[in-house]
Structures are given as structure tokens and as C-alpha cells.
Image 1 (cartoon, one colour):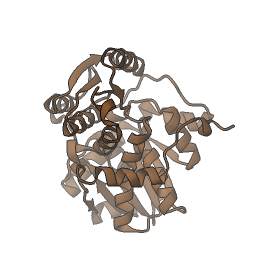
Image 2: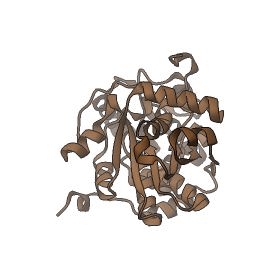
Image 3: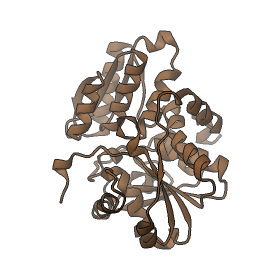
Length: 320
């Protein structure tokens, strides 16, 4: 029996159901293009602007789907999650839309703007050390204390299905793509996107862009065994999570290729998007364009769908 049969892998029907469930709450974000960036890449790039989503990131899709999937009696006990910021804000807002409580565990070095957003949406913040082990330990304590439901940032199937709705919207709007690329951290966005791409564009190649300083997904695929421990060292605060077990299975099932990217390349791509497209994007989002520019030989001549995952930037902390 393969490991994937032991996990509740979401499918395309789950993504379609998520799209219906969140339609009245999530934004249908625009698709943008830049002739000058296309010229640099030698490709046609279609940017799905999830930086313009509610809470400033794609994360609202998955959180909203998960929160609104809960039966009323379960939802009444509230929800718990851990997050570097965007998912926490997304769960906080999703919980607010349903009128239930939310507890969010965050690393003490999380981006200030993201922490402010979580609190503004009414969630209770709990800080911990900046490791996955510390996040999970505090989350387990809160689950036991509150009786709430875990809305994991990337392994909850309803979250993965919700994240896939961004790719669903993109493909239904633009049609044929040769390539789909997203950032990859814990694997929720790439997992949901891969499900959709496989269903609608079976010939398309699927890529994930990952920081060199947090390249656990790349190493997991290279070795065939999921990396379980990592101390990340990257400016991409939203991509510091370890690839989840269910997410790793989705990477293998849909033959996702992971491309590691240096932080310096990500910063250059972020600045390029600022300058050429007038869009505010965070490093964890700009990394996808950085991967395209770094690996021009892969993407040249292709029609590329790129999910711009978020735009929550602490401007005072930028290295320029």
C-alpha cells in the first residue's frame, strides 16, 4: 500500500466545492502581465495577483474553506492554528466572518505587519520560538485547552483545496498554460495548484520555487524521504515551514519540480515587480518570478501561469 493511500488527499472535486463555498467571501483577484518582464524571461508570464486577496495573501482561500466546512457545533468551539503571519491573519478573518473564536501561534520573529493584522481581525495571539517543533507544541497545548479545531496552515485537506481555487480561477480565465509555478513552503498552495493543473491542463509542467535557506521540499524529493527538521535561514518568512506529509505526497503524485532560489535573487525579483508592475509583493511571493528568471532555459518560449502569493511587506525591514 502506498503512503498516499493512508492520507486523505484532496481531489479536483474538493477544489471545485471550495470555490463554491468561498465565492461570496474571497476576492476574485486579477491577472496581470508585463511586457518588459516577459522580455527579460523570454516567456509570456501571467501573474495571478493574490497579493490583492483579502488579508493580502492567497491564504484566505484555504482558511475560509476550512472554517466554513466545519459543522456548527464544532465551529462553536473555535479554531486554532500556527502561522508565520499570513495564514494566521486568514484564519482570524475567516473565523470573524463566521462569528467564532480563533487562537493563533506565531514565531516571535514574525513580520510586524502580519502580527498587527492577526490582532486586528480579533484573534488571540500566542508567541513561540521560531521552529516548527515549538509552533506545534504550543498549538497542541491550545487545542487541549480550548477544544477547538486545528486549521493547519498547509496539511488540512480543506485548506489545500481552498488554496487550489487560485489556480482554478487563473486557468479558467486565461486558458492554456505550458507551466504553472508557485512559491513553496509547507506545500498547501503548490499542492492545491497541482491538483487543478493536472485536472485541467494535464500536459502542463508544475514548478515550486523554494528558498535555498529553507530547501526541505527540494531535499525531500531528491532523497525520496521527507525532511522533518530544518532551521530555516531566509528572508522569505512565509516559506519557512517544513513540507507536510500530505503535501509531499501531492508533490510526488503530480510530479512537481522544486527550484531552489537564493534570497538575493528573490530580492531582485521583488524590486523588479515593484518597478515594472507597480505591485507590492512580499519576498515569499517574488521568489516565483526569481525562479523563472534564474532558470530561463526552462521557461523560455512558454506560457507561464505564476501565482503571486501575497503582498504583506514590512517596509522598514527591506534590505534596500
